Image (cartoon, rainbow, N blue to C red; front, side, top):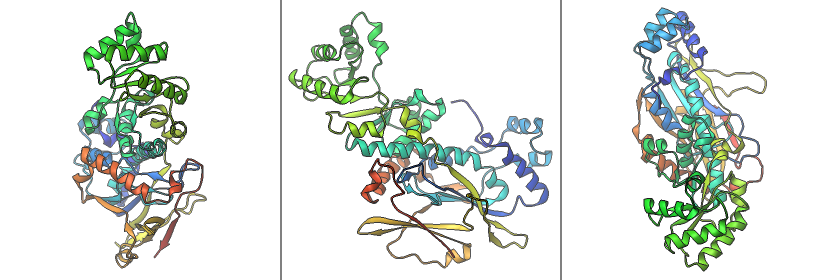
Length: 440
């Protein structure tokens, strides 16, 4: 991955606002910004938070070097005074929000960023670009995992998206319930399970399919997975078992009527004595295709295009809005937009989920000033959904790295199981639980 500054992964107006605010004195006003979505993608019942750990990783590198500062100066994006202010910039504020793997709904306060206006406004595009994409992939992955039941899903979408997005998608897919990825950079960066053996070109470059299978087994062992649909599947399966014996690890099918073909191949493998040989299917799968394959004798799935594009919802439409700011008198004041169809709820937020008979029944968002929220007492059975990620510029490392990803992977399954079972339906419908907002 090329070297770059995440501090330039912004929209230009973030720096022009900073420049103007530094000149008029408002850049140092304390502020609270909130990330939320006004609605889920059409028909979706829930969303899955992903990307927070990546935000923390990028915050560690969120500063400008001499070359970056020269670019801003040469383009006259900001004034010399602002360049001086940016020379030693580091985010010194605090961030809290929903943990990765948590379910979210319309108006859930997914992330709250507190600091000065100057430092918080610079984070808008970076935060939104990460959360919108990663959460879209994780949400799609979660639906796919539900449709696949107990059969593992693997990410194979790297070639269907931007090369950097492929790495982010692999990570988000695991948060969403996937078991591994074909992307080696994602596997290296995040300690994910890597999968992959051979493509059709490997078979085609050999003089015969048998030669290709013999070569692959010689290199990777009998436990490898052989791709059997380059020519004739029935003949390929017969050849595969002849070459590897009944100890053949697996076969992969990438075309045709996958359910019917999986059934035929399973019967053929069993008849040849390869009863433990697994069947993996690929080929433009989505959650609906996976649901249709539930009765087929398939052992695992490889999912590409529909995973990395959010299965038709490549963004969560999250926004980053100012909800509280310091006034001229030094007191904190809730603020809100009143725009038609884009109004916001003023004030910082608390967030809880209530349960009945161990099933979630509602999301509770409590809004108000810091003083009023400090005096709020939730119901005893409500679960607090907010965790602290950054405290005055210092990130909590428990939310970063491989262990955090695997914890999010496990947490998603637990959080989904706590929702009404209709959350796992692929039928279009309303969010599975309502969001109830209270302004103190």
